[in-house]
Structures are given as structure tokens and as C-alpha cells.
Length: 357
Image 1 (cartoon, rainbow, N blue to C red):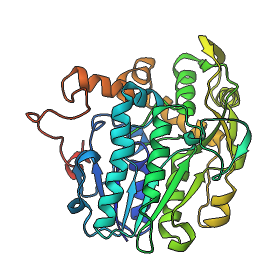
Image 2 (image 1 turned 180 degrees about the vertical axis):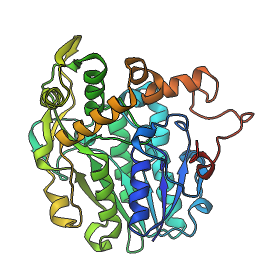
Image 3 (image 1 turned 90 degrees about the vertical axis):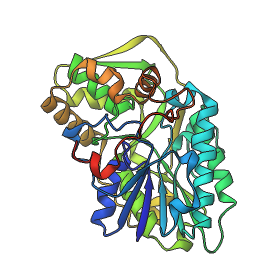
Image 4 (image 1 turned 45 degrees about the vertical axis):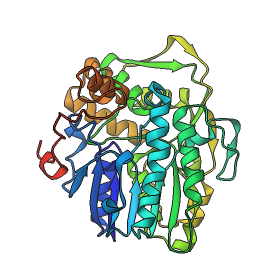
């Protein structure tokens, strides 16, 4: 299948693309390249695929001609970044996603996989929630994903098959590593400072899933019969991997020798707390075979961090923190306050060239 992946040079995309290629698909990329200097090569090499550097707010039908499927990963990727300017979040994550779906349908694309999020459930509380539960997002990020799902659903018909993938909180090693997600962050603290620093009181529930398993889920949805997935949402993860944050910290403590647990001085309850039922994806997409556990993921990260000599300055700096990198690009005038590049500045190299950096 000829597939376009937006955000293919991101944290998840740079892991997903090699899996798609291995499965025999022809993959092309589309990425704004905000993070093109943020590679972490202990996480592996970047894939070499044809690609363009362009904002999804500017995507056109012509960009999508000739593709059988689109996997839409491109987005402002977490709550802190999305809260930096909520209106820009809605422009990119909501209206940009709808624009991409509309352009895909006009271009004759048959399948559209939208990277949504379990953040849609937001303040769900103690009970387990499945895909039919009320959506209660508590941030611009979650709201933008809900709005995009709702509007894209109106495009579905016999010839256009949108699917809404709602991954749990991601973790794991990537060539475009992020330290601003919970397991990756806590493991980095433990390795560099022998300290596991919790910035909430540790009680919120959060399901987590490895980025390789997220990629496996997208591949299964891409290849499933259209009638099995058309206009449906799928939670991506495993029932056993719903944890309280303090439980994730305990897993890290068992992985990294000699570290201790500490709560930040301003630690407080997090309003985002949800336990997710992953039964539907298991029933509907039997090809989805997740392989990772949180303990194995922590061990993977521990090995990579120690082998690379990770320092506190690196993981707390802007290089691997999405909001920090965006703020640095604004300070350096590489992008403006609307997250657009000034016209006078050249675009970064396309991905074939960048793969060798």
C-alpha cells in the first residue's frame, strides 16, 4: 500500500515508518521539521523515505494525490506544549487535522488513520472507560483531538474510511526521543540524579504503551478490512498496563539501582486521571500483538541512557522537551509566535538528506 505519514520524523513516526516499510508498504513523509536537530542516535537511525517539509495547516489535495492511505500523526504533542497557545493548538491539531482529512478524501485516499489520544477521557475518575464513554478532556490538547474526531467522522462513507486511534501515554526509545512523558522522564531522573522526582502526588491513573506497540496497532488498523474499522475509535494499549503514577515510579526504582523516590515541593493532584479498557482493539484487530511491558521499557531506556552518558542538562534542556524546543525556535527567530517560519528563512533539508546527519 502507498502510505503518507504526517509527522513521520516525530517521536512515534520515526519508529512507525520502519515497521511499515518492513511490512511491505511504500512510505512517504510529511513533516514540519520543528525537531530536525533533536535526534538521539542511541535510539536508532532515522528512516530514509521520500518526504516534504510542510505545515499541515497548508496541506492540499495535490499533496495527497496517489496515496491509498494517510496516517496522520502530526500535532502539537502534549498538554504543556498545547497550553502554550491554545488557539494555535486548535489550528494545528483540530483544524489542520480536519483539513488533512478533507484533502485526503478529495484526493481519493481510501483510509485515514488519525492519531487521537486517551487524553480524550481526561477526568474520567476511577472506573474503566471504553470507546463509548463520555469524553472529558481537560486540556487544549485533549479538546483538539475530540473536536477533530467529531468533525472527521462526518466525512466517512463507503469510499473513505477514517479510523481514530487513541493510544495510552507513550513511552520507549526513539531516534527522536522525548523526555517530557512519564516513564521516559522518571527513568532519566533516576539515571542522572539517582532520584525519581514526581511532580504530582502520584495518585492519578494513567495507561501507558510502548511506541513500538502503538506502531503495531496502526499497522493492524491499516491492513484490517475496511468494514471492521470504518469510522471507529480504538483505545491502544493493554488492560494490565493501567498504572497510578506512583506505580510507574516504583517500576523505575526497581530498574535503576540506587535511586530514591521524591515528590516535588509543589506536587499536587493531577486532574487527568483515567483507567482505560482496551478490549475492543483486542477483539476487533487480532493482528495487533503488543509485546512490551513497562518493566521492559524502563530497562530499555536505562540501558540507552547509561550507554550514552545522559546528563541532567540534556534531558531537562530544550533538545528533548517539545515545549522547550518550540520556545527555543521562537527565541532564535526560526519560527514566529504562530509557529510559522519567516519567509526569508530556508526550510530544513528534506528527509532523504537529513537521514545522514
